[in-house]
Figure 1 (cartoon, rainbow, N blue to C red):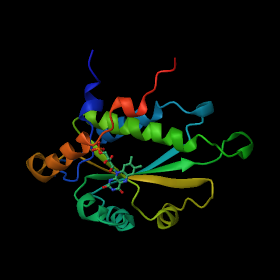
Figure 2 (cartoon, rainbow, N blue to C red):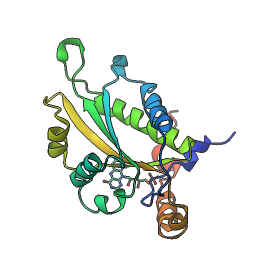
Figure 3 (cartoon, rainbow, N blue to C red):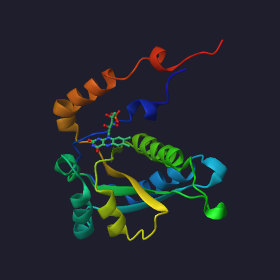
Length: 184
Ligand SMILES: Cc1cc2nc3c(=O)[nH]c(=O)nc-3n(C[C@H](O)[C@H](O)[C@H](O)COP(=O)(O)O)c2cc1C
């Protein structure tokens, strides 16, 4: 037995190629999110996306990113914004598992992307308030969680700075012994 190939090959690139991402691929990313498990089957997520060919909106989302994120994310082909619904439909009570569940859906997207030769790079570094305004979420019940940069990794630069970075990151993973404990 081996670890799932897409899980093994998933990573967060900072260099993307000019190759376009098809509508079908984008739909499959959201289909993967759709199948994620969630508490009470609430599915407390929403996704907003834009292609880079929509210059105006792509540029607007780019401006919402903070730190050095815009410098590399500007090369991606698609942006996806994940938005969490904080309260259960049932009696509008706080859903303590919402962040967990949108995380599960987001990882499903990342794994489906890797399965198709694509990669995503999620970012927490963006202005949440401005993003809520931009998306006209208009309610305390919805909160943007991450912005995804989506695209095919740039194979040339992947073999230089990104590969070195990737190697460093994978080497920095904790060992199982550090976070897995068998109960006896
Ligand atoms: C919720 C979340 C927020 C993140 N925010 C950023 C970010 O703002 N900028 C960035 O460059 N990477 C960001 N990352 C990517 C992580 O740094 C990356 O997943 C981690 O270093 C492991 O590398 P890998 O995804 O290539 O395995 C984020 C990842 C997650 C899951």
